[in-house]
Image (cartoon, rainbow over all chains, first blue to last red; front, side, top):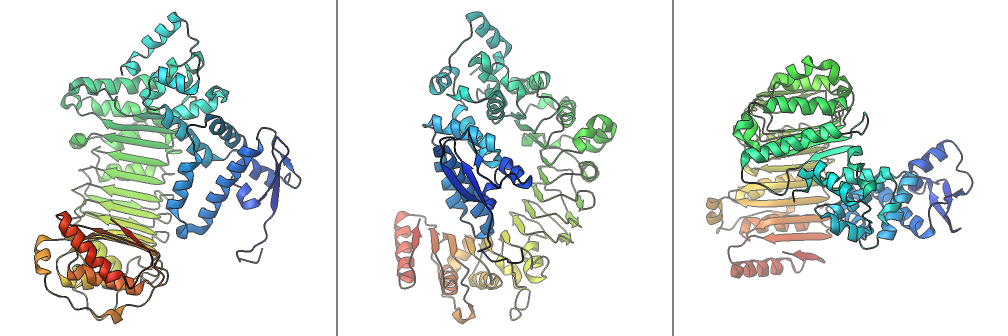
Length: 163
Length: 424
Protein backbone atom coordinates (compact mmCIF):
# COMPACT_ATOMS: atom_id res chain seq x y z
CA UNK A 1 0.00 0.00 0.00
CA UNK A 2 1.64 3.16 -1.18
CA UNK A 3 -0.68 5.57 0.56
CA UNK A 4 0.15 6.63 4.09
CA UNK A 5 -2.79 8.88 4.68
CA UNK A 6 -5.28 8.36 7.47
CA UNK A 7 -8.00 7.37 5.07
CA UNK A 8 -6.20 4.24 4.01
CA UNK A 9 -8.78 1.68 2.98
CA UNK A 10 -8.88 -1.28 5.33
CA UNK A 11 -10.31 -4.68 4.89
CA UNK A 12 -13.52 -5.13 6.85
CA UNK A 13 -14.03 -8.23 8.91
CA UNK A 14 -17.59 -9.43 9.42
CA UNK A 15 -18.58 -11.16 12.64
CA UNK A 16 -21.86 -12.75 13.62
CA UNK A 17 -22.87 -13.12 17.24
CA UNK A 18 -24.62 -16.20 18.61
CA UNK A 19 -27.98 -14.40 18.41
CA UNK A 20 -27.53 -13.57 14.73
CA UNK A 21 -26.39 -9.94 14.85
CA UNK A 22 -23.81 -8.80 12.31
CA UNK A 23 -20.79 -6.66 13.25
CA UNK A 24 -18.43 -5.14 10.70
CA UNK A 25 -15.04 -4.03 11.97
CA UNK A 26 -11.78 -2.84 10.44
CA UNK A 27 -8.97 -5.34 10.19
CA UNK A 28 -6.80 -3.27 12.53
CA UNK A 29 -9.40 -3.60 15.26
CA UNK A 30 -9.99 -7.28 14.61
CA UNK A 31 -6.26 -7.83 14.96
CA UNK A 32 -6.51 -7.35 18.71
CA UNK A 33 -7.86 -10.87 18.69
CA UNK A 34 -5.19 -13.48 18.08
CA UNK A 35 -7.92 -15.89 16.96
CA UNK A 36 -9.16 -13.50 14.29
CA UNK A 37 -5.65 -12.55 13.33
CA UNK A 38 -4.83 -16.18 12.64
CA UNK A 39 -7.93 -16.50 10.49
CA UNK A 40 -7.03 -13.39 8.54
CA UNK A 41 -3.54 -14.70 7.94
CA UNK A 42 -4.87 -18.09 6.88
CA UNK A 43 -7.25 -16.27 4.59
CA UNK A 44 -10.40 -17.75 6.11
CA UNK A 45 -11.71 -14.35 7.05
CA UNK A 46 -13.35 -13.38 3.81
CA UNK A 47 -16.85 -14.46 4.72
CA UNK A 48 -18.96 -13.91 7.79
CA UNK A 49 -17.25 -15.37 10.84
CA UNK A 50 -19.76 -16.94 13.22
CA UNK A 51 -19.07 -16.67 16.94
CA UNK A 52 -21.46 -19.18 18.51
CA UNK A 53 -20.15 -18.53 22.02
CA UNK A 54 -20.56 -14.77 22.09
CA UNK A 55 -23.82 -12.83 22.31
CA UNK A 56 -24.34 -9.49 20.58
CA UNK A 57 -24.30 -7.60 23.85
CA UNK A 58 -20.91 -8.96 24.86
CA UNK A 59 -19.45 -8.75 21.37
CA UNK A 60 -20.36 -5.07 21.15
CA UNK A 61 -18.47 -4.38 24.39
CA UNK A 62 -15.42 -6.32 23.31
CA UNK A 63 -15.34 -4.48 20.00
CA UNK A 64 -15.61 -1.15 21.83
CA UNK A 65 -12.63 -2.10 23.99
CA UNK A 66 -10.55 -3.09 20.96
CA UNK A 67 -11.53 0.07 19.13
CA UNK A 68 -10.48 2.36 21.99
CA UNK A 69 -7.17 0.62 22.47
CA UNK A 70 -6.36 0.49 18.78
CA UNK A 71 -7.08 4.21 18.45
CA UNK A 72 -4.90 5.02 21.44
CA UNK A 73 -2.04 2.95 20.08
CA UNK A 74 -2.29 4.67 16.71
CA UNK A 75 -2.29 8.12 18.26
CA UNK A 76 0.95 7.34 20.11
CA UNK A 77 2.02 10.08 22.46
CA UNK A 78 -0.90 12.28 21.53
CA UNK A 79 -3.32 9.76 22.97
CA UNK A 80 -5.22 10.79 26.04
CA UNK A 81 -3.90 8.31 28.57
CA UNK A 82 -6.23 9.49 31.32
CA UNK A 83 -9.23 9.07 29.08
CA UNK A 84 -8.27 5.51 28.26
CA UNK A 85 -7.68 4.73 31.92
CA UNK A 86 -11.13 5.99 32.73
CA UNK A 87 -12.63 3.88 29.97
CA UNK A 88 -10.90 0.78 31.33
CA UNK A 89 -11.99 1.55 34.87
CA UNK A 90 -15.61 1.99 33.80
CA UNK A 91 -15.48 -1.08 31.60
CA UNK A 92 -15.49 -3.43 34.54
CA UNK A 93 -18.62 -3.38 36.69
CA UNK A 94 -17.91 -5.60 39.68
CA UNK A 95 -21.61 -5.82 40.47
CA UNK A 96 -22.58 -7.20 37.10
CA UNK A 97 -20.92 -10.59 37.37
CA UNK A 98 -22.89 -12.12 34.53
CA UNK A 99 -21.49 -9.62 32.03
CA UNK A 100 -18.05 -9.76 33.57
CA UNK A 101 -17.68 -13.52 33.25
CA UNK A 102 -19.28 -13.65 29.83
CA UNK A 103 -16.80 -11.02 28.67
CA UNK A 104 -13.93 -13.04 30.11
CA UNK A 105 -15.11 -16.09 28.21
CA UNK A 106 -15.39 -14.06 25.01
CA UNK A 107 -11.95 -12.51 25.46
CA UNK A 108 -10.56 -15.97 26.08
CA UNK A 109 -12.24 -17.43 23.02
CA UNK A 110 -11.09 -14.56 20.84
CA UNK A 111 -7.69 -14.59 22.54
CA UNK A 112 -7.40 -10.89 23.34
CA UNK A 113 -4.57 -10.89 25.85
CA UNK A 114 -4.76 -7.30 27.09
CA UNK A 115 -8.47 -7.59 27.78
CA UNK A 116 -7.99 -10.94 29.52
CA UNK A 117 -5.26 -9.42 31.67
CA UNK A 118 -7.42 -6.52 32.69
CA UNK A 119 -10.50 -8.60 33.47
CA UNK A 120 -8.61 -11.32 35.37
CA UNK A 121 -6.90 -8.69 37.41
CA UNK A 122 -10.26 -7.12 38.19
CA UNK A 123 -11.65 -10.42 39.44
CA UNK A 124 -8.46 -11.03 41.45
CA UNK A 125 -8.94 -7.65 43.10
CA UNK A 126 -12.46 -8.69 44.04
CA UNK A 127 -11.06 -11.82 45.71
CA UNK A 128 -8.13 -10.20 47.45
CA UNK A 129 -8.18 -9.97 51.20
CA UNK A 130 -11.62 -11.50 51.66
CA UNK A 131 -12.35 -14.47 53.82
CA UNK A 132 -13.78 -17.65 52.36
CA UNK A 133 -17.36 -17.14 53.50
CA UNK A 134 -17.49 -13.65 52.03
CA UNK A 135 -16.12 -14.89 48.72
CA UNK A 136 -18.55 -17.78 48.58
CA UNK A 137 -21.43 -15.45 49.23
CA UNK A 138 -20.35 -12.85 46.72
CA UNK A 139 -19.66 -15.31 43.95
CA UNK A 140 -22.31 -17.85 44.72
CA UNK A 141 -19.89 -20.72 45.29
CA UNK A 142 -21.33 -23.76 46.98
CA UNK A 143 -19.13 -25.25 49.64
CA UNK A 144 -19.21 -28.94 48.79
CA UNK A 145 -16.53 -30.09 51.19
CA UNK A 146 -17.44 -32.64 53.81
CA UNK A 147 -16.48 -31.67 57.32
CA UNK A 148 -13.51 -34.03 57.27
CA UNK A 149 -12.28 -32.80 53.91
CA UNK A 150 -12.53 -29.19 54.98
CA UNK A 151 -10.51 -29.91 58.11
CA UNK A 152 -7.90 -31.62 55.98
CA UNK A 153 -7.56 -28.68 53.64
CA UNK A 154 -7.32 -26.25 56.54
CA UNK A 155 -4.56 -28.29 58.09
CA UNK A 156 -2.67 -28.63 54.82
CA UNK A 157 -2.56 -24.90 54.32
CA UNK A 158 -2.94 -23.71 57.88
CA UNK A 159 -0.33 -21.01 57.48
CA UNK A 160 -2.42 -19.34 54.77
CA UNK A 161 -5.50 -19.30 56.95
CA UNK A 162 -3.90 -17.61 59.91
CA UNK A 163 -5.79 -14.43 59.21
CA UNK B 1 -21.61 -17.80 38.33
CA UNK B 2 -17.88 -17.68 38.58
CA UNK B 3 -18.11 -21.43 38.31
CA UNK B 4 -18.90 -21.21 34.64
CA UNK B 5 -15.30 -20.20 34.01
CA UNK B 6 -13.04 -23.10 33.08
CA UNK B 7 -10.18 -24.21 35.35
CA UNK B 8 -7.43 -22.58 33.38
CA UNK B 9 -9.06 -19.17 33.57
CA UNK B 10 -9.65 -19.58 37.30
CA UNK B 11 -5.99 -20.49 37.73
CA UNK B 12 -5.05 -17.43 35.73
CA UNK B 13 -7.17 -15.24 38.02
CA UNK B 14 -5.69 -16.82 41.13
CA UNK B 15 -2.22 -16.25 39.65
CA UNK B 16 -2.74 -12.56 40.11
CA UNK B 17 -3.24 -12.81 43.84
CA UNK B 18 -0.45 -12.69 46.39
CA UNK B 19 0.55 -16.25 47.15
CA UNK B 20 -1.08 -16.51 50.56
CA UNK B 21 -4.43 -15.34 49.20
CA UNK B 22 -4.09 -17.69 46.26
CA UNK B 23 -3.59 -20.67 48.52
CA UNK B 24 -6.46 -19.74 50.77
CA UNK B 25 -8.88 -20.06 47.84
CA UNK B 26 -8.39 -23.80 48.20
CA UNK B 27 -11.05 -23.78 50.91
CA UNK B 28 -13.81 -22.37 48.72
CA UNK B 29 -14.98 -25.64 47.26
CA UNK B 30 -13.58 -28.96 46.10
CA UNK B 31 -13.08 -27.55 42.66
CA UNK B 32 -10.80 -24.84 43.96
CA UNK B 33 -8.72 -27.13 46.09
CA UNK B 34 -5.73 -27.56 43.87
CA UNK B 35 -6.10 -24.64 41.49
CA UNK B 36 -3.46 -22.58 43.23
CA UNK B 37 -0.83 -25.17 42.45
CA UNK B 38 -1.33 -24.43 38.77
CA UNK B 39 -0.71 -20.74 38.99
CA UNK B 40 1.85 -19.38 36.60
CA UNK B 41 2.82 -16.45 38.74
CA UNK B 42 4.21 -16.66 42.23
CA UNK B 43 3.96 -13.40 44.08
CA UNK B 44 5.08 -13.44 47.68
CA UNK B 45 4.14 -10.56 49.91
CA UNK B 46 4.42 -10.91 53.66
CA UNK B 47 1.28 -11.94 55.51
CA UNK B 48 -0.95 -9.17 56.69
CA UNK B 49 -0.91 -10.51 60.20
CA UNK B 50 2.46 -9.20 61.25
CA UNK B 51 3.89 -10.55 64.43
CA UNK B 52 6.27 -8.22 66.18
CA UNK B 53 8.77 -11.02 66.46
CA UNK B 54 11.26 -10.44 63.66
CA UNK B 55 12.57 -13.95 63.65
CA UNK B 56 9.08 -15.35 63.28
CA UNK B 57 8.19 -12.96 60.51
CA UNK B 58 11.30 -13.91 58.63
CA UNK B 59 10.87 -17.65 59.01
CA UNK B 60 7.15 -17.47 58.19
CA UNK B 61 8.00 -15.73 54.98
CA UNK B 62 10.81 -18.10 54.05
CA UNK B 63 8.64 -21.11 54.83
CA UNK B 64 5.78 -19.75 52.76
CA UNK B 65 8.04 -19.50 49.74
CA UNK B 66 9.58 -22.92 50.29
CA UNK B 67 6.14 -24.48 50.50
CA UNK B 68 5.23 -22.96 47.19
CA UNK B 69 8.34 -24.43 45.65
CA UNK B 70 7.42 -27.87 46.93
CA UNK B 71 3.83 -27.85 45.82
CA UNK B 72 4.10 -26.07 42.53
CA UNK B 73 2.75 -28.34 39.87
CA UNK B 74 2.39 -25.83 37.08
CA UNK B 75 4.53 -27.84 34.74
CA UNK B 76 7.79 -26.64 33.41
CA UNK B 77 6.79 -23.08 32.91
CA UNK B 78 6.42 -20.16 35.28
CA UNK B 79 5.59 -16.66 34.17
CA UNK B 80 6.73 -14.63 37.17
CA UNK B 81 8.48 -15.14 40.49
CA UNK B 82 8.25 -12.17 42.83
CA UNK B 83 9.76 -11.80 46.26
CA UNK B 84 8.63 -8.56 47.85
CA UNK B 85 9.54 -7.07 51.21
CA UNK B 86 11.44 -10.03 52.55
CA UNK B 87 11.30 -9.14 56.26
CA UNK B 88 14.48 -8.13 58.00
CA UNK B 89 15.97 -10.34 60.67
CA UNK B 90 19.63 -9.94 61.57
CA UNK B 91 19.91 -13.61 62.47
CA UNK B 92 18.81 -14.55 58.99
CA UNK B 93 21.71 -12.90 57.23
CA UNK B 94 23.94 -15.93 57.20
CA UNK B 95 21.42 -18.31 55.69
CA UNK B 96 19.93 -15.77 53.33
CA UNK B 97 22.39 -16.25 50.45
CA UNK B 98 21.60 -19.97 50.46
CA UNK B 99 17.89 -19.30 50.57
CA UNK B 100 18.09 -16.88 47.66
CA UNK B 101 20.16 -19.36 45.70
CA UNK B 102 17.51 -22.01 46.17
CA UNK B 103 14.73 -19.68 45.09
CA UNK B 104 16.57 -18.42 42.05
CA UNK B 105 17.43 -21.95 41.00
CA UNK B 106 13.78 -22.90 41.23
CA UNK B 107 12.57 -19.89 39.26
CA UNK B 108 15.16 -20.21 36.54
CA UNK B 109 14.60 -23.94 36.13
CA UNK B 110 10.98 -23.11 35.39
CA UNK B 111 11.97 -20.80 32.55
CA UNK B 112 10.51 -17.80 34.27
CA UNK B 113 10.07 -14.53 32.37
CA UNK B 114 10.04 -12.15 35.30
CA UNK B 115 12.02 -12.22 38.52
CA UNK B 116 11.67 -9.66 41.29
CA UNK B 117 13.94 -10.17 44.24
CA UNK B 118 13.24 -7.34 46.65
CA UNK B 119 14.73 -7.66 50.08
CA UNK B 120 14.28 -5.29 52.95
CA UNK B 121 16.65 -2.32 52.61
CA UNK B 122 18.48 -3.27 55.76
CA UNK B 123 19.89 -6.32 53.99
CA UNK B 124 21.80 -4.30 51.48
CA UNK B 125 25.14 -4.99 53.11
CA UNK B 126 24.61 -8.65 52.38
CA UNK B 127 26.91 -9.99 49.76
CA UNK B 128 25.41 -12.23 47.14
CA UNK B 129 28.03 -13.40 44.64
CA UNK B 130 25.95 -13.54 41.49
CA UNK B 131 28.76 -14.40 39.12
CA UNK B 132 29.84 -17.49 40.98
CA UNK B 133 26.21 -18.50 41.44
CA UNK B 134 25.66 -18.27 37.70
CA UNK B 135 28.82 -20.09 36.65
CA UNK B 136 28.58 -22.88 39.23
CA UNK B 137 25.06 -23.80 38.26
CA UNK B 138 25.08 -22.92 34.62
CA UNK B 139 23.74 -26.26 33.49
CA UNK B 140 20.76 -26.25 35.83
CA UNK B 141 20.05 -22.60 35.24
CA UNK B 142 20.41 -22.76 31.52
CA UNK B 143 16.68 -22.78 30.71
CA UNK B 144 16.40 -19.55 32.68
CA UNK B 145 19.18 -17.88 30.71
CA UNK B 146 17.14 -18.23 27.58
CA UNK B 147 13.87 -17.00 28.99
CA UNK B 148 14.33 -14.25 31.55
CA UNK B 149 13.03 -10.94 30.26
CA UNK B 150 12.58 -8.81 33.34
CA UNK B 151 14.79 -8.65 36.38
CA UNK B 152 14.38 -6.40 39.38
CA UNK B 153 16.80 -6.54 42.29
CA UNK B 154 16.61 -4.62 45.51
CA UNK B 155 19.06 -4.66 48.43
CA UNK B 156 21.09 -7.47 46.94
CA UNK B 157 24.78 -6.83 47.29
CA UNK B 158 26.48 -7.52 44.00
CA UNK B 159 29.44 -5.83 42.36
CA UNK B 160 30.47 -4.67 38.89
CA UNK B 161 31.77 -8.10 37.98
CA UNK B 162 28.49 -9.68 39.02
CA UNK B 163 26.56 -7.20 36.93
CA UNK B 164 28.61 -8.03 33.88
CA UNK B 165 28.08 -11.74 34.48
CA UNK B 166 24.36 -11.19 34.84
CA UNK B 167 24.10 -9.29 31.59
CA UNK B 168 26.22 -11.75 29.69
CA UNK B 169 24.10 -14.69 30.77
CA UNK B 170 20.59 -13.32 30.54
CA UNK B 171 20.78 -12.59 26.87
CA UNK B 172 17.10 -11.90 26.34
CA UNK B 173 16.79 -9.37 29.12
CA UNK B 174 14.48 -6.48 28.29
CA UNK B 175 14.00 -4.77 31.62
CA UNK B 176 16.52 -4.31 34.37
CA UNK B 177 15.97 -2.54 37.65
CA UNK B 178 18.57 -2.19 40.39
CA UNK B 179 17.97 -0.57 43.73
CA UNK B 180 19.96 -0.30 46.98
CA UNK B 181 22.98 -2.08 45.67
CA UNK B 182 26.00 -0.65 47.41
CA UNK B 183 28.82 -2.70 45.97
CA UNK B 184 28.39 -1.29 42.48
CA UNK B 185 31.02 1.28 41.55
CA UNK B 186 31.51 1.56 37.83
CA UNK B 187 28.52 0.44 35.92
CA UNK B 188 29.10 -0.64 32.37
CA UNK B 189 26.27 -1.79 30.16
CA UNK B 190 27.32 -3.08 26.79
CA UNK B 191 24.54 -3.61 24.30
CA UNK B 192 26.44 -6.52 22.79
CA UNK B 193 25.72 -8.47 25.95
CA UNK B 194 22.04 -7.59 26.14
CA UNK B 195 20.86 -6.55 22.69
CA UNK B 196 17.20 -6.50 23.70
CA UNK B 197 17.53 -4.29 26.74
CA UNK B 198 14.78 -1.68 26.56
CA UNK B 199 14.30 -0.32 30.07
CA UNK B 200 17.00 0.44 32.58
CA UNK B 201 16.32 1.82 36.03
CA UNK B 202 19.01 2.33 38.64
CA UNK B 203 18.32 3.97 41.95
CA UNK B 204 19.65 4.51 45.45
CA UNK B 205 23.07 3.00 44.81
CA UNK B 206 25.17 5.57 46.59
CA UNK B 207 28.54 4.13 45.63
CA UNK B 208 28.16 4.14 41.88
CA UNK B 209 30.77 6.57 40.55
CA UNK B 210 30.17 6.25 36.86
CA UNK B 211 27.67 4.87 34.40
CA UNK B 212 28.64 3.95 30.89
CA UNK B 213 26.16 2.65 28.35
CA UNK B 214 27.37 1.66 24.92
CA UNK B 215 25.75 0.20 21.86
CA UNK B 216 22.47 -0.34 23.63
CA UNK B 217 20.62 -0.38 20.37
CA UNK B 218 17.25 -1.33 21.85
CA UNK B 219 17.34 0.93 24.87
CA UNK B 220 14.21 3.02 25.00
CA UNK B 221 14.07 4.29 28.55
CA UNK B 222 16.78 5.23 31.02
CA UNK B 223 15.98 6.29 34.54
CA UNK B 224 18.38 6.90 37.36
CA UNK B 225 17.47 8.31 40.73
CA UNK B 226 19.21 9.06 43.96
CA UNK B 227 22.73 8.44 42.76
CA UNK B 228 26.00 10.28 43.35
CA UNK B 229 27.98 10.06 40.20
CA UNK B 230 31.41 11.60 40.14
CA UNK B 231 31.94 11.19 36.42
CA UNK B 232 29.99 12.30 33.42
CA UNK B 233 27.39 9.92 32.22
CA UNK B 234 28.55 8.17 29.08
CA UNK B 235 25.93 7.33 26.49
CA UNK B 236 27.22 6.06 23.20
CA UNK B 237 25.14 4.69 20.41
CA UNK B 238 21.72 4.60 21.98
CA UNK B 239 19.64 5.39 18.91
CA UNK B 240 16.30 4.28 20.31
CA UNK B 241 16.47 6.16 23.56
CA UNK B 242 13.41 8.34 23.90
CA UNK B 243 12.79 8.58 27.63
CA UNK B 244 15.29 9.95 30.11
CA UNK B 245 14.72 10.50 33.77
CA UNK B 246 17.16 11.79 36.33
CA UNK B 247 15.88 12.75 39.77
CA UNK B 248 17.28 13.40 43.22
CA UNK B 249 20.86 12.85 42.20
CA UNK B 250 23.63 14.46 44.21
CA UNK B 251 27.36 14.69 44.13
CA UNK B 252 29.84 16.38 41.91
CA UNK B 253 28.02 15.45 38.80
CA UNK B 254 24.52 16.27 39.90
CA UNK B 255 24.35 18.89 37.22
CA UNK B 256 25.11 16.42 34.50
CA UNK B 257 21.75 15.82 32.95
CA UNK B 258 21.13 19.50 32.35
CA UNK B 259 24.69 20.02 31.13
CA UNK B 260 24.98 17.08 28.92
CA UNK B 261 21.57 17.09 27.40
CA UNK B 262 20.80 20.74 26.89
CA UNK B 263 24.23 22.22 26.47
CA UNK B 264 26.39 19.52 25.02
CA UNK B 265 23.52 18.06 23.12
CA UNK B 266 24.02 14.41 23.84
CA UNK B 267 20.89 12.56 22.74
CA UNK B 268 19.06 15.86 22.62
CA UNK B 269 17.65 15.23 19.18
CA UNK B 270 15.94 11.99 20.04
CA UNK B 271 14.35 12.34 23.43
CA UNK B 272 10.57 12.35 23.57
CA UNK B 273 10.08 12.40 27.31
CA UNK B 274 12.32 13.93 29.93
CA UNK B 275 11.97 13.96 33.67
CA UNK B 276 14.61 15.95 35.52
CA UNK B 277 15.18 17.38 38.89
CA UNK B 278 17.90 19.96 38.60
CA UNK B 279 19.05 23.45 39.27
CA UNK B 280 18.41 25.50 36.11
CA UNK B 281 21.21 27.90 36.94
CA UNK B 282 23.71 25.14 36.21
CA UNK B 283 23.23 26.26 32.65
CA UNK B 284 24.64 29.66 33.39
CA UNK B 285 28.22 28.75 32.79
CA UNK B 286 27.29 28.53 29.13
CA UNK B 287 27.09 31.62 27.03
CA UNK B 288 23.67 33.08 27.57
CA UNK B 289 23.54 34.41 24.05
CA UNK B 290 23.95 31.14 22.27
CA UNK B 291 20.92 28.94 22.21
CA UNK B 292 20.77 25.53 23.72
CA UNK B 293 20.50 22.42 21.61
CA UNK B 294 17.01 22.11 20.30
CA UNK B 295 15.14 19.13 21.64
CA UNK B 296 13.26 18.58 18.45
CA UNK B 297 11.40 15.43 19.43
CA UNK B 298 10.66 16.33 23.00
CA UNK B 299 6.96 16.13 23.70
CA UNK B 300 6.68 15.66 27.43
CA UNK B 301 8.82 17.30 30.08
CA UNK B 302 8.61 17.05 33.84
CA UNK B 303 11.02 19.32 35.62
CA UNK B 304 11.59 19.64 39.31
CA UNK B 305 13.36 22.97 39.25
CA UNK B 306 15.52 23.95 42.21
CA UNK B 307 15.07 27.68 42.23
CA UNK B 308 17.24 30.22 43.98
CA UNK B 309 16.60 33.57 42.40
CA UNK B 310 15.53 35.43 39.33
CA UNK B 311 18.17 33.96 37.09
CA UNK B 312 16.80 30.49 37.88
CA UNK B 313 13.64 31.58 36.11
CA UNK B 314 15.55 32.89 33.13
CA UNK B 315 17.43 29.65 32.79
CA UNK B 316 14.22 27.71 33.13
CA UNK B 317 12.76 29.73 30.29
CA UNK B 318 15.81 29.00 28.15
CA UNK B 319 15.13 25.33 28.70
CA UNK B 320 11.49 25.70 27.70
CA UNK B 321 12.51 27.63 24.61
CA UNK B 322 14.79 24.78 23.64
CA UNK B 323 11.79 22.47 23.23
CA UNK B 324 9.87 23.68 20.19
CA UNK B 325 7.59 20.66 19.92
CA UNK B 326 6.61 20.33 23.51
CA UNK B 327 3.08 19.08 24.13
CA UNK B 328 3.00 18.56 27.87
CA UNK B 329 4.98 20.54 30.41
CA UNK B 330 5.08 19.98 34.14
CA UNK B 331 7.21 22.14 36.38
CA UNK B 332 7.52 21.72 40.09
CA UNK B 333 9.10 24.76 41.67
CA UNK B 334 11.35 23.96 44.59
CA UNK B 335 12.36 27.24 46.11
CA UNK B 336 15.31 27.31 48.44
CA UNK B 337 14.55 29.25 51.61
CA UNK B 338 17.04 31.97 50.76
CA UNK B 339 15.59 32.33 47.32
CA UNK B 340 12.18 32.81 48.79
CA UNK B 341 13.21 35.89 50.72
CA UNK B 342 15.26 37.34 47.91
CA UNK B 343 12.35 37.22 45.64
CA UNK B 344 10.53 40.20 46.90
CA UNK B 345 12.43 42.05 44.24
CA UNK B 346 11.04 42.43 40.81
CA UNK B 347 12.51 40.46 37.99
CA UNK B 348 12.79 41.74 34.51
CA UNK B 349 11.95 39.60 31.63
CA UNK B 350 11.67 40.11 27.94
CA UNK B 351 8.60 38.28 26.69
CA UNK B 352 9.63 38.72 23.10
CA UNK B 353 12.07 35.91 23.64
CA UNK B 354 9.16 33.54 23.48
CA UNK B 355 8.37 31.82 20.21
CA UNK B 356 4.85 30.48 20.00
CA UNK B 357 4.33 26.76 20.22
CA UNK B 358 0.95 25.54 19.07
CA UNK B 359 1.63 21.97 20.20
CA UNK B 360 1.87 22.86 23.84
CA UNK B 361 -1.52 21.85 25.12
CA UNK B 362 -1.08 20.83 28.74
CA UNK B 363 0.81 22.73 31.38
CA UNK B 364 1.03 22.00 35.06
CA UNK B 365 2.88 24.18 37.53
CA UNK B 366 3.17 23.06 41.12
CA UNK B 367 4.93 24.47 44.15
CA UNK B 368 3.87 27.86 42.88
CA UNK B 369 4.46 30.46 45.56
CA UNK B 370 3.47 33.52 43.58
CA UNK B 371 6.74 35.40 43.69
CA UNK B 372 7.81 37.55 40.70
CA UNK B 373 10.01 34.78 39.34
CA UNK B 374 7.15 32.29 39.35
CA UNK B 375 4.99 34.77 37.49
CA UNK B 376 7.66 35.32 34.89
CA UNK B 377 7.67 31.65 34.07
CA UNK B 378 3.88 31.55 34.08
CA UNK B 379 3.56 34.51 31.74
CA UNK B 380 6.16 33.15 29.42
CA UNK B 381 4.46 29.80 29.18
CA UNK B 382 1.03 31.30 28.58
CA UNK B 383 2.33 33.61 25.88
CA UNK B 384 4.06 30.72 24.25
CA UNK B 385 1.28 28.17 24.38
CA UNK B 386 -1.10 29.69 21.88
CA UNK B 387 -3.24 26.55 21.71
CA UNK B 388 -3.22 25.79 25.39
CA UNK B 389 -6.04 23.47 26.47
CA UNK B 390 -5.33 22.68 30.05
CA UNK B 391 -3.49 24.70 32.67
CA UNK B 392 -3.13 23.47 36.21
CA UNK B 393 -1.52 25.51 38.97
CA UNK B 394 -0.88 24.03 42.39
CA UNK B 395 -0.17 26.73 44.88
CA UNK B 396 2.21 26.19 47.73
CA UNK B 397 1.20 28.31 50.69
CA UNK B 398 1.80 28.22 54.41
CA UNK B 399 -1.65 29.36 55.42
CA UNK B 400 -5.08 29.41 53.90
CA UNK B 401 -5.03 33.18 53.80
CA UNK B 402 -1.84 33.26 51.78
CA UNK B 403 -3.23 30.61 49.49
CA UNK B 404 -6.33 32.71 48.84
CA UNK B 405 -4.30 35.80 48.17
CA UNK B 406 -1.96 34.01 45.81
CA UNK B 407 -4.88 32.41 44.04
CA UNK B 408 -6.48 35.80 43.56
CA UNK B 409 -3.30 37.25 42.12
CA UNK B 410 -2.89 34.37 39.72
CA UNK B 411 -6.49 34.65 38.61
CA UNK B 412 -6.10 38.35 38.09
CA UNK B 413 -2.97 37.77 36.08
CA UNK B 414 -4.53 35.14 33.93
CA UNK B 415 -8.08 36.19 33.45
CA UNK B 416 -7.57 38.04 30.21
CA UNK B 417 -5.71 35.14 28.73
CA UNK B 418 -7.39 31.81 29.23
CA UNK B 419 -10.34 29.60 28.43
CA UNK B 420 -9.99 26.66 30.83
CA UNK B 421 -8.39 26.51 34.26
CA UNK B 422 -8.04 23.79 36.84
CA UNK B 423 -7.60 25.00 40.44
CA UNK B 424 -5.86 23.32 43.28
